[in-house]
Image (cartoon, rainbow, N blue to C red; front, side, top):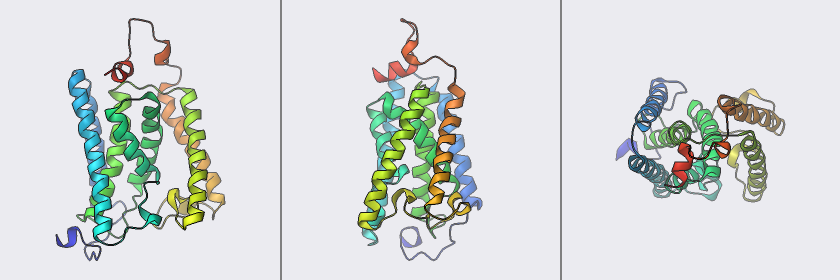
Length: 254
């Protein structure tokens, strides 16, 4: 498979906002729009088929990444455990797509969309440029997490609340604390809470560790608030009148 698969890659390196990077982001945006437009016009049975297809793509892409790391002898617990935010969201999103759950939907929307946007803008693809597997896998993974996060809101009818913002923010902090302790124990840097990421990111513009963590707290809260803003002041599904079920209610009962 030559340069597509090998760890000893000698092709064009990944270029931030280079042509392949921009094309991928445009494709992700177009697929999101197409799914939203199409998804609003189909019946419940086809919704279920779309959810299963998206779940299968998420899992397949993630499994192939682990296969690649194992076959190229770069699989370590310091790098490959599914503890980074987008890796966690891959598995949670895949499960929620086949077993719809409102609390998982709020994670898919808030953490999935916020995390994948940052990851799509500054992907951790290392030196691997297009068309290497690692470049494609990274962009597909983050693109799918973004797409399904938008899908559950725009098509499936999930509606976030102020309480969901609080739950997600507190849960994210507890998770980061646990991961930080694990990082210290095994010498890893999942979530980049113990040091800067090795590739360019917004963290490079912030003060040194641990002070950049405070900036990330503010950014995270701001992103959650921004994602909630389109729904501020709207009724929660829980207070909809009887006999007028929301799309999210239909999904849960699917």
